[in-house]
Image (cartoon, rainbow, N blue to C red; front, side):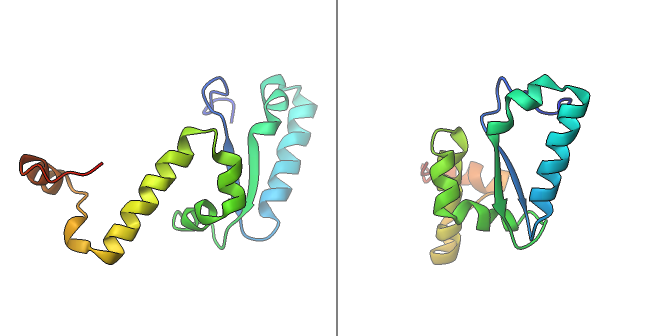
Length: 118
């Protein structure tokens, strides 16, 4: 984790899983941090947020981000705004699919026609 996560920039790390996998992993990770004396992880353990998800697949993140308890803990981070925009986009795909584009050529064409809304 220390190799891939810069805790000076990261404000929150979500650990999401079905059942107790997230809890067991968190306990293991913290025990290893103490054993190895990994100060950066120990000092940033409050940045880890444990949340339940129905699976380990990416689509389960939608469930996590739709949980108001989780979102209230993330309001101070940049991710809260990004999730809000992503949810708005997903609603647009559901309600008005002709208006939601996400491929480069589609977005470029919409931009040329001044039809991009942000």
